[in-house]
Amino acid sequence: MDLPRMYTEFAQHWTLISAPADYAEEASHWREALRRKLGPGRHAILELGVGGGNNLSYLTGDFQAVAVDLSPDMVEQARKLNPDVEFHVGDMRTVRLGRRFKAVLVHDAISYMLSEQDLLAVFATAAAHLDPGGVFIAAPDWYRETFRDPFVNWGTETDGAVTFTNLEYTYDPDPGDTTIESLNWYLIRERGALRIEQDRHVLGLFSRGTWVDLMMGSGFAVEQIPLPGDDDPRQPYLLLGVLRE
Image (cartoon, rainbow, N blue to C red; front, top):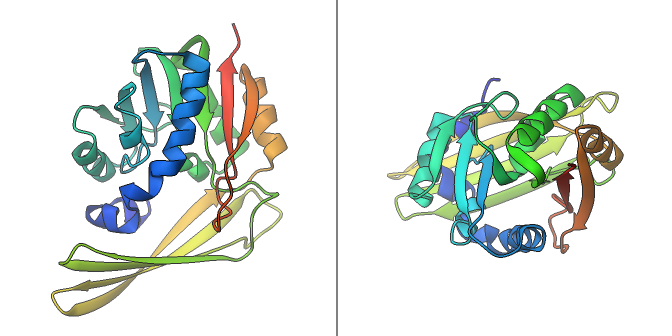
């Protein structure tokens, strides 16, 4: 899989692209779901596609975490935010750590799965790392029923030395397939100079029914957890699966 530039040459600017503070409320819903299913205790959890580790950083105080990401550059960023977490570089579709956990998590990185075969591979990875009764949680950005075409989003952050503006235009060039595209323009101001860079992300788009059916076919009993709404229509639901015994 070719990685977008966001996760390679621009990974050094990750906290300007996606601020950890923006994840506090959402992470509270993940924590609540995990506690409801797992009960008290510092349970072992695995996150696939951890990215910069923003969401995970709000869970490490309660759980013992291991994390995987395809990008070594993003693992480096996630390690800075989560120094006590064990990290591995790997593909969420194929990685096998030879260990089992109480829960496996995939945040919005699962949105990069482009086909039903990709999703089934991720669900198989989750099942391979869970004991019976273990919990799997995923949060795709979009479902076919909730996608806005086009979706335009932008934000600007600065650390005093660099000002990073990310302009995102997401659209569906072919409604007959299972992918959408997000075109990104990065306006980077550093030492008085402005440069403009372009990036392209290809994402999967599936109906909620497809997600549920594939998870159930992979051995999970599935629960859909609505997330509180705001002005951003992405991630309206957490999909929670319990691996059947």
